[in-house]
Image (cartoon, rainbow, N blue to C red; front, side):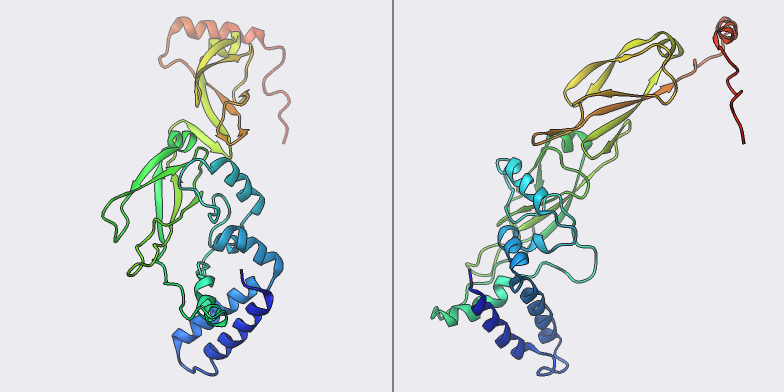
Length: 300
């Protein structure tokens, strides 16, 4: 809530205090100066500061999508554990310097003195980062996970919202490491990792399934029951379906808020498991049903 003038004044004073020329060889001062420069880059830019005020440090990460984060806040607000300062589905750090600077800590002491407060805010506990592995159905439907946090006697229960994907991020305010004394705790930062499924593949909110069908089902057509997130659904396989054809079950994919993906069945025609003379003869007679040679149009 500091004014622009207060930010500029605080930056100048702290920059002089921690400048490498004033503190030659002091690594702590050097790191403080780097953090200070990063803080000033944000707080001195109206657009960046607006995002920082709305989303916190998450807005500074590479690939952060403000519109996507706002959409997430609308549908995840009631899921438990969500935070307006989270980075639910935006990009994370891409390596290099840590972006989790507590800019408020850098300026708080000076601002308090400027306003006559006399005392700085207590420094909160450290943020804790955890990667959670979940199954595909847990990601689709949402799930609860229980995590042990260093310094805490009881496990922390976190609700993973429906539609989570590998790389999805969630910030749980106040569930990180306890702060010193009576200081507030840090936050818990969770990244999800969805285990591969044996049959289903995921692309955003869409699901894809390699669906085995028999020669009879492919040629004559059939109704086949397919497992979906909503339960078993009948899929109509039309007559003369070819290997690799893709059939769609609309709105039977993954749901995230009001958005819903589709489920696609990629047809895999399976040969009989055993050799049978009658089957072989029947298939030979089926050759007469082809109107042209199967390979007549192949050219190099």
